[in-house]
Length: 128
Image (cartoon, rainbow, N blue to C red; front, side, top):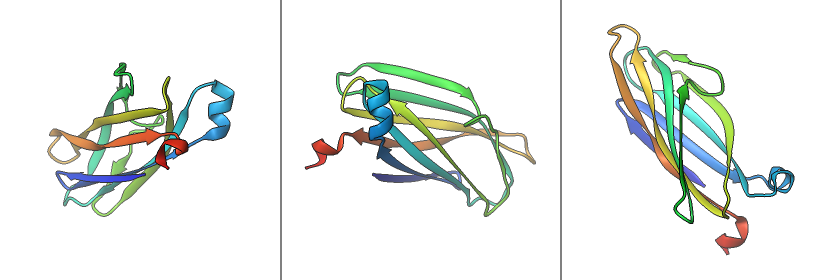
């Protein structure tokens, strides 16, 4: 599945994929997501924090907040992009993630939120 959004000139594109091997290992559904963040603004920015709300199909929620992504706090000049891969497990075969990044404009030191588009993840059998 593919989703995209742009906030304050920062484009976020997400792609999700069911990972059958990791799901078997964990004993519950596991999904990978690839995210590309592109700076289409006129300034240089740095990703400082991420904040996720993760919800399964039973309505159980969990939150994740922390510095950067995959151990990095990338700095993006105008036109540059950063891509990373991560994953999430669910107790159910359908789940959703949505959230935001907190960025800082390097020149003004102003921080601002950037929306991460909602990712819906479901077992391939549910797609038929």
